[in-house]
Image 1 (cartoon, protein in one colour):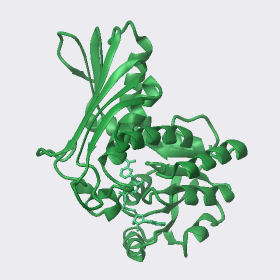
Image 2 (cartoon, protein in one colour):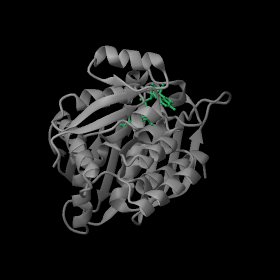
Image 3 (cartoon, rainbow, N blue to C red):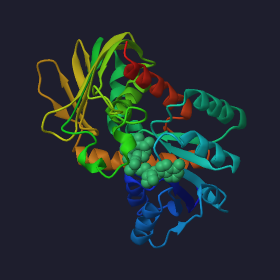
Image 4 (spheres, rainbow, N blue to C red):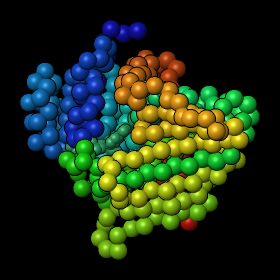
Length: 326
Ligand SMILES: NC(=O)c1ccc[n+]([C@@H]2O[C@H](COP(=O)([O-])OP(=O)(O)OC[C@H]3O[C@@H](n4cnc5c(N)ncnc54)[C@H](O)[C@@H]3O)[C@@H](O)[C@H]2O)c1
């Protein structure tokens, strides 16, 4: 394993800043070069991290000698073009979800990755989480173990406001129908978990609610999917008094397992009380640390658990089908 892997970051908004903070204490991955289309975002970043170098533009960053990987934290629009420019330079790419809303370009990029053997992964934060591993274990033990015979999946999301308070500095795109909205932004994480554990989901019915005028993103979504032979119900809405409520429950004849508030995990046999897999903050910390470990493995060409572009596109195809309504 390398002692040090230099990372360039394009996109210095909410997620770019979060990743910079996580990388600051990492032993191997080191952010060195940054760039953002907004000069003020670059200036703010250099004020907080004076050791970083601001590239002249995206191409100059990608061409920096010695760079091992590019992290892309722009809105979805430029993800494919930036990925392809990074592949031209032989970089390993870690790209934010949603992969893209341009499926033709994603398919061309995936074909290129396969043909030329590029290293690429997408940042679904639950990919390295203890909760996903617990769901996979419970699923693998069926029809025995905690679940018995699996019966249904339920996903519930609620937001006091959209965007959530911690994303209030994000661009207008996040509130708009074309690239933003909670279905792409939040539900996609749970559809990723669903498809990783149960296999590809098919949308049976979907009713997104949109504002009656303007480009605003969805305000509610009610849907029924099928995955792994089970019905999957989705209920999501802006409303209530909590910033970010999320819950994904996999229930069977013997018991159920639930992801709660992102990294929390509860399990119970029917008739018994819930037990927790651990403190949610500790589970979050271990999931985020593991994500960086997996990124290092991806850069070094070793096996890793991060979703590739094809898996991320399969998530996005399900998400866009939900948003289209059925
Ligand atoms: N994995 C997660 O848990 C998670 C959480 C939040 C957001 N995200 C994803 O991260 C991405 C960024 O979201 P955000 O909340 O940071 O958005 P943001 O609006 O806060 O930041 C995006 C930044 O990208 C810059 N930018 C836009 N177009 C660019 C281009 N062509 N080249 C260079 N810079 C460009 C903008 O100036 C801005 O600074 C999105 O894809 C979003 O869905 C992922």
